[in-house]
Amino acid sequence: MRIPEIKIKSKYLWISILLVLISAFGLWKIHNHRSSSEMMLDRWTYYLLEADRLVDGYRMPVAARSIALVYMGLYEVSRPFTDDFVMSLEELIPNFKSIDSSLWTNNLDRDAAINAYFFAMFNKLFFTAPSGLRSQFEQNYEHWRTVSKTEISDEAFTSSEEYGIMMAERIFNWSALDTLAHQGHLHNYDRNYKVGDKPGDWKPSQNFAMPALLPYWGKIKTMIVDKEAYLARPLPPYSTNVNSVYYAQALELVTMSRPLSNEDKWIAEFWSDDQPGITFSPAGRWVNITRQILAGSKYSFETAVEAYLKLSLALSDGAVVCWRSKYEYNFIRPETYIQQVFDPNWEPLHHSPSFPSYPSGHSVIGAAAAEVLTQIFGQDYYFVDRSHEDRVEFDGTPREFSSFYDAAFENAFSRLPLGVHFRMDCDEGLRIGFQLGKEISRISLKGVPTS
Image 1 (cartoon, rainbow, N blue to C red):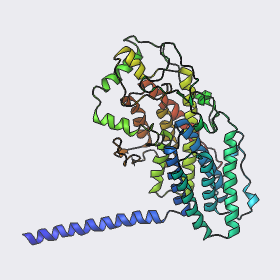
Image 2 (cartoon, one colour):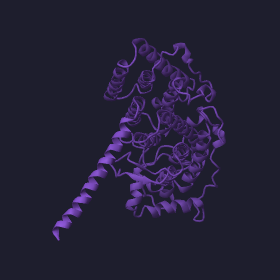
Image 3 (cartoon, rainbow, N blue to C red):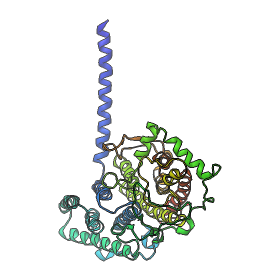
Image 4 (cartoon, rainbow, N blue to C red):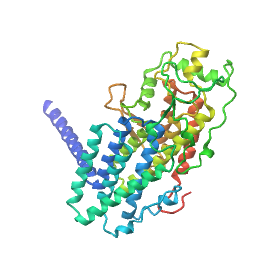
């Protein structure tokens, strides 16, 4: 009886080994079919996320705009090398002037131009980066520079680098036209901001008494959308009455927190990208999700550039319209309301951010990102988000999502068990974000109108 049993196990063992080898060959084939442009873009995006995480002052709205500046230039640098990008950003973004690549004749190399662009742009945006990170930027630049030098003529290499550097200057100079927004990481906390004194007005947390974060950000210029068209809907009259919506939604948070379930705690911390030096910003989180999708996929370089461009425009404009509403309504955080009405000792899972509550910024940009990514990658795109799997400060175990909408809804919900938003903040944030994302998604880079 033992001999046939051994044969059966051996047969299944060899089948298992064969399947593993086939799978490994498939992954090797995908990796080795990625162009040098795709691998270089992935690496520069990795360092963009490191800058987002480690450079002081890159809180969400500033980070979102800086990410958009980076990918705007990437798109413009890439245009001469493909027929996929007919639309110039000059046609989309007010006061932006593109570069006539014909000045360089046809003597341009895409990889050399892009590599020089990224390095020049990073030096302009992240000049306050830690020295170790700046060294990594330079090492990455020199690596891809060496690769390009072995493949093209000296003349082509020099022209390509000049083209990339000039694009970085063009983008940076365009950014400087908006004096309120430019280099916002240097002045994001306003110690002179006067906090409101009416019932329901936002006040800094007693446990995290930081000045107001970027109270002027809603006044900066959007890149694509009309920010006034995205003003959040008015709130009902403020009340502490037991029959009011505020009381009911505050009670929901108190009940949820006593005790907070393991699942809700995992969700809350998984999406809480508000920890400078540890996590990237909430905007960077959606860039990282996109990077994960592109890293092991069949998508082309052009698809990657389009995804990063549209995503970053949605993140940047989403942050502006959100901050426009936040400081328009100047609404109280749940922590303050609950301590006044329910329990003076109640605390959220993590400190309340130092800006008004309504609407939720996570919800706005998450919904906007979900719309853009759905338009590019598909309606029911299953993915696993591994953004925090190596973190030890909290449970960063990867989570699975059946679609980008699924992730956006969980991202919005996460602000409730975290204790930093009312449900109405998140619902309105989702509404605004989905609407904004649809507008950005309708941009046709091929110059063909979309429905």
